[in-house]
Length: 284
Image 1 (tube, rainbow, N blue to C red):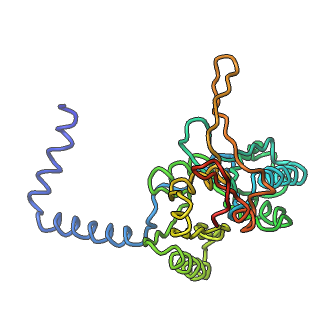
Image 2 (cartoon, rainbow, N blue to C red):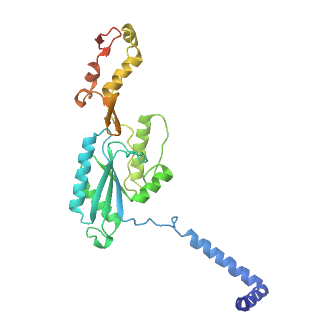
Image 3 (tube, rainbow, N blue to C red):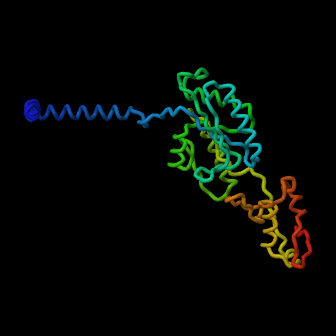
């Protein structure tokens, strides 16, 4: 402390003697710091290089599981064949046993494990490699890709509910209007310099069959809306018919019409519903 005091005491005495000079120097330094601060970027922590890619790949709404599996296999083959930087590619479809990251059937998540950056030959940096991968995958029609990093993607999802760095959320009850506004927002954002992978979330486009009940005719046959709903649900969505045991494992046995008989309106017309007297009749 004596050593520090020998340096401190003369400085404090000089500061008290020349108070105006000290205040002017402090004010000048403060103004300079404000000018420097105003010229700095808004992000103090740069994006970290995690060394791998996590890619959300999205097919058209309503795509079947078999189509999603076939597409994911094509993507894996293209990446492994054309990019020596890729060590391994793993895809995930749907949800795991613990549904912490649920996705529809038409979405598959790709985990691209890359070699050390010193072994890269196709590109010099992460952004360039992602662009070249997108270009190579463009030969597969109808698939949208969003390249991110695994940890970055998870943190984005935890903080904002979306997997992207920047997201625009539009709220409302009308799905058609939301679709229109989402497409319009995507068009505007795509024109902004620096914006890439602009993709509106698909909330429409899946084919549906809407059934309007003839209540008078249903009542004439002694049926209720619940009776007809149960038949439609069993035929198209499936209904539990029993339980199957495999050792200690237990599985619900669900029955429904096969794929060939639940694709169009005629399949609904051909459904027969059991009447209270045991007869069957089509009540469409």
